[in-house]
Length: 282
Image (cartoon, rainbow, N blue to C red; front, side, top):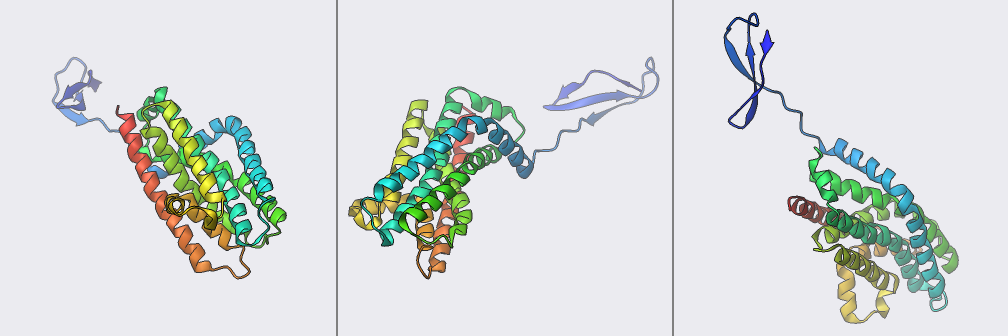
């Protein structure tokens, strides 16, 4: 049996195989070359998540401390003007979710904006992984950095404002759901922005909106800003967490707020995936 160079016929790779001795002309047949199987979403997502986590660990941990200290500092300042009650719940819940907004929205918008400007998307475009795995893996890695800071901020806030620590376990649902919604928004902003500087600006504005509309009590905001607050994905995570400080939490409302976070997260990540495809082919 002998194998001669492959021939390209009608766009597919074929290998011509001849039977018999090398000097004999045997009957020839064309056999299609086997192609590698398409990469599945879950293994690709895991690989991208691990790669992003290892690359971002050194650079993002200092920024995580900055996000945590920023939120704790805001609560200390608000302690002088807020005594307790519903306003204290709003301040603590909003400051805790602000850590998620700083990392998942602001830093992820800057990351994808830089990736697009430097041509780094070309590297990911050559990998045999689905576009959704790239977006979800990066978003999950950045959101993972928010978990310690969010819990530390919540504990410090409960101590400052004398709120119960009983239902802090709700953060185990608030962080990933609010993180998914904000990470998808941050990735979309970074990928759709025509320039890297604009992506950075949009990320900063998004974090400022989460600060203004999330930390300040809703009843103290002007009416137009309350409508803008309802459009911000992190608002529903803040509301879900704030409800758990009541003596008898309204759990159906908590679940409803978390459900809105989940829906917004799915939509924002889908938009980010579309934006990644759009940016990668340009």
